[in-house]
Amino acid sequence: MTKNDMFALVSMAITDDEASITTVDPRRKEPLVKTYEPWLASSEYKKVVRLSVRNGWRVIYDGQPLWG
Image (cartoon, rainbow, N blue to C red; front, side, top):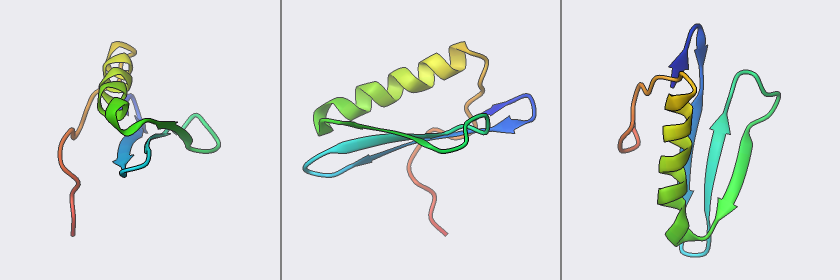
């Protein structure tokens, strides 16, 4: 995501036991990591992205992981 001259990252990781959403925001000293039940993570990720867009962030890439 980008806003003005800042870049941020929102990512999601899911295993069989738990899931996490990590937000790397240049205004914070450390990344913010929240854990969820695996079945809930996808909808929570979409909420985080929608809220960020409402707050003026622009999505650069929203898709499968990029490798290479």
